[in-house]
Length: 330
Ligand SMILES: [Zn+2]
Image (cartoon, rainbow, N blue to C red):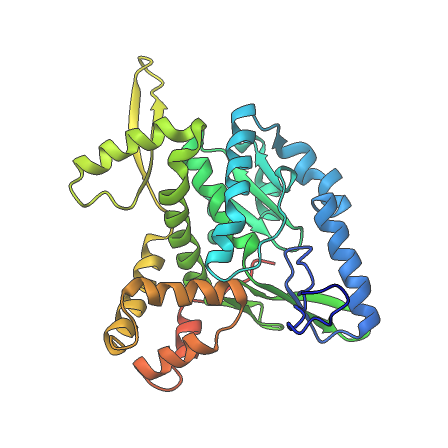
């Protein structure tokens, strides 16, 4: 093409770059939306609100990451954007400082309450309001890597906020991944489905990338040996955690499994039923899973809801949402 000739190709209109975990804002006036964007960007860039940063949560409970932990997280963060894009998402530019290791011994009752850690045994969380991830150290790099990957996938999933009170421009999270949150009832629908999709994505990320991360490569190799010995029943093994026994300095080995087994079975049943009903439309079960993953990533639930209604009957999408809901702990 000669210089000065008009370009006939359609110009690509660039979508605005996703600057925070929030992908969409619903129901705001333009000026409110702009100030909300500034507010959210500030939280994202400062890695949480000031009171959380300087208050109890991070100052008193956080511990420094070790050098190898920093390398593991950096490797996961480096590989994540392409993975998210592959499943139809728009990756967020998450950094090391968005991820906080919490010292289990310092997590007293108050800290646990503020983090919604009521039951104990939680390994980590993603807090959309604070745009941060916390990890409760399992004392095992591979297991921590699984947790961090899980939370980073939540962080990258579709998230929308909506106006709660018109005059005070207060906002609430409406969607996080596949979850749908109610305004007044303080309920979250499809929690189990969202967790199942997230952990299934962790398994796929792990299979593709974990053996190439030097700091955990040996542990991945050891895990493969145990998986092989389990003869086809080891698919769900996430790590082998060694624990020092207090008595003779001996070590015991505990097999850890991927999170949310019950929820993943629920999801698998739905996927299987859809696949059987529409075996002409889908080549593999994995193709159905990919639609669930895409819905968590781009926020569009319509296609899945249609498939579910056509598989089980009218009203079933809502019923599944109800059956997999959780009350909000606030
Ligand atoms: Zn989760």
